[in-house]
Image (tube, rainbow, N blue to C red; front, side):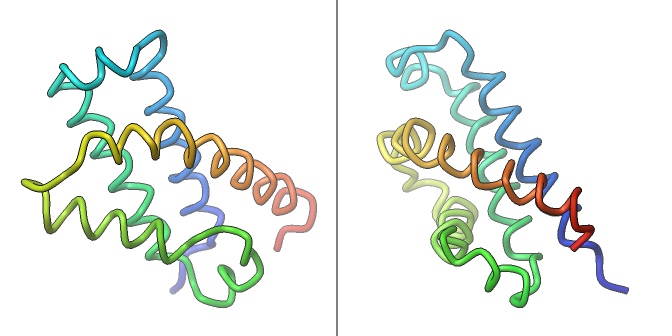
Length: 117
């Protein structure tokens, strides 16, 4: 039995929330120097990517404005090339991509709660 896509969307929302919580009042320099923070954030990005990979194609096709393939690709890179993870790239994801994704996910959840998909 297939899971409701909203389950995975909520996993994405929650992982982004954890990243924001981990990094509250954290500077880029603090992040770059803390292996603990890097590890925690990278794990949550992996969760976001894994949740995306579990979304059915008919669902992702409804939301083409979201770079689903790019998100899943980031997860694959983190999982399979963990020794080559570029901290600058991770910081860019945190600063540029996650806020945008958070807003998009919020809209999906609002629509889903109204329409029940």
